[in-house]
Length: 284
Length: 284
Image 1: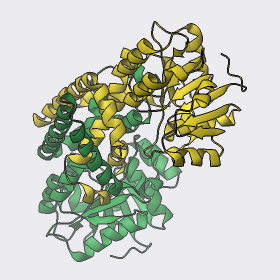
Image 2: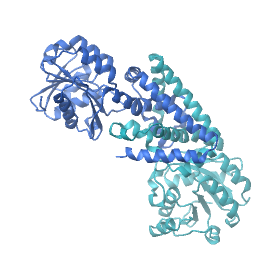
Image 3: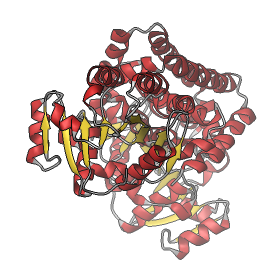
Image 4: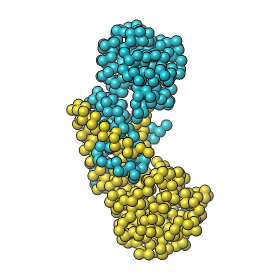
């Protein structure tokens, strides 16, 4: 399948991410439809021209005409949807997703999926601290990282198609990772950082500190405004890896704490020099 | 002393903060001089009109003519300077500072200082990840928090003078805290967050992750590019409080880890809801 604009795209799950995909792909000239249980989300997206049409039900016609289906659901809902409605997918369709955890989802879906449909997993590393199609914003993709997560079951054509989707949406760096590599990476850079931000807000009643704080604390806790339904599911789907990441981080923070307690200034400065050196790689 | 522009101000320590104070105060019409060991810093500031004149030595004339002296040195260097050169200060002068830790510094200086000179401590909650007068930027003050840290030894006049300095520089919220309250607050909002950022960078060799990460990780580690000489001194000056803050945070992060390990989704969602609710107070 080529990215030519006479192709039909279906978005399943019209929240912040699904809505942002819809906006971007409609602007690029595709005919985009959507399915979401929330009628207000569909109405909003039609009214604002993000989608050509939509349904609150798994409409066989909408599903059957889509050359590509993009799932922007929570992990368990995505698996359930495929289980219930995959018979409605168009033969030869490509399926992709935006799910934030891969190993458990990709394996289950690729195992059960019809052989005439291909699922190629992806994770757009973009988001906002707000949710819903009303906050859809395709600019969150620009320059962000996009990760394609193939397995041995994927064809080179589907992988290339998924990479080109990332490029079309405006992502900066487009990478390939295996599901296991993805979940290790995401456990560290995303899930661990969210756990830290939450713990900073819940470890004491700090509301009165807003008058005193500088930018450091604001930066570290920006992501502590969190969609608890989505993130608790993501954390639990990746729990072994996340627990391992928290344990490794805690061990290192404790090592720094011990340097402070025993007044080992040289040891502390060594940690800071390493930190400064490594952080330079993340500037862009 | 009133803030009228025929008054002379001396900055001791012409780095990022001292330089930013100098720029702002010169623009406001004060005659600003500076002392810094680094001749290049003095030359740069004179050349760019941040200061009227400067010296690499504790010049008795520069010091003796200043109605206000602002110390932008590291804590130990500040204490040493007062010990060695306080006899040169003008009778009736006000002394203030930008030091990031208060209890140990304020008590030592107020105890030893001449009775005809008053030290009123302050902490401007502003900064950058770069250092040196070459990076001085008075815009870092605009809307930021400014904390005046008086003790029972301070006069109402000096406290009011220090508050008006914060207002003149463009700070947003100007607050009063005791040295102990300040050090508790700073241990949490600033020092703990810097320890976390460092530990995120040093807990594994994560440089290759730059291609995959989203904004969360960048936000949480921005401050991990750190001036190791300054921050190791600040950490050690406040070590009991900082160790207490790290321990409390680690306990909470471990509680979240345990909720994940035992798949307690309700417990996790409770933490996230509390976190979301509290974080709203920090938006501005």
